[in-house]
Image (cartoon, rainbow, N blue to C red):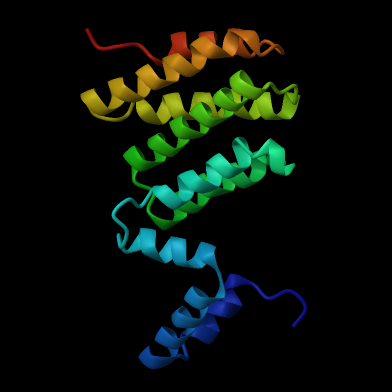
Length: 178
């Protein structure tokens, strides 16, 4: 078969009995860390479901420059997408998005960065974080908005208009309750 699709896989899975399905899931679990992380998150098997996702975000947004590690916006964002597929709980999603912004801004602030793509991704994630955060209940929302405000504040020295973009987005989306 040249290009198998989910539809074809689903037809094959329909022929499996319970033991075969469990065996398949066991093999997927053993096949890679991402699969284990997904299953642990989906079934709530970790004390801190967000921690492995945060570790991935931190690794790709704030790499060890002494070890000559590179950044990867794509891999950091993929971690958030993986969490969304596994659990997708809005508070957890907002936490990961805000953490992404903190890591990206912190790296730029502490070590410097002139990657326009990195900055553009920070601006997009900042907007997404604001959108999700404002859907959350009071205290959780306010805590996340405070953290995003700190990101906004340190971004003014980055160049490429990042500070202005974050100011504009923060003003638009962070209307606080009176």
